[in-house]
Image 1 (cartoon, one colour):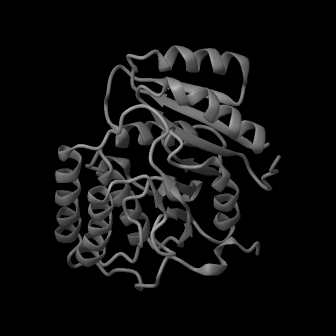
Image 2: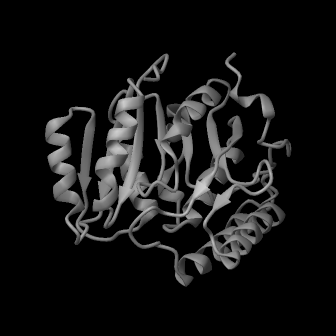
Image 3: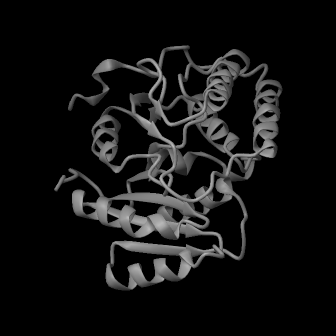
Length: 258
């Protein structure tokens, strides 16, 4: 079992119809990491995910559940989870998917890298392409999105749309969540952008992304269109704002303890 030095860490996992995955995800994380708690944010899943999460939470004090009235979106789910963490004493907050596209084995790498950073991004593109079981069209869309974000915003992220991240508490306290307008995967772009604009230290670490192990992907055309629009909104809103130095987020020594 990994022992996390320092303060307690919370992993926030939004769920919608993830009944097939949440038990195994909980068992893997809690058995491997002694100082990590879990918060599932469930959007009233029709498949009974919420009821199963209640059962799991009743049997383990490290599992917590937020129930929402319906499918309100990824971005608002994470914001609800962040606010819940800030109301408590968590010093590190990790966001990840609940479908095993994000492998729990990387949590140790995040907690190592955050010792030298304020936000750590799990990147699929720091060392080539690290994506398994995606169709070529999905991979090309993701790579185009990353290049598009870099070109328009000037933010030097190799994987701006990724959703596997670790925040220091100070970052979440600084961000005005009322300014976050996106709710799909573009939420990840916007959140990283505001962190970068505020001058926080951002690092990327390599991960291997696996296509979801079960359930149905949430990707759709509305999410893609929202991402295109939010990039230009950020560009014009901060056109005259002084940007941080354009240093690469990926540093090969990020996984070395200080």
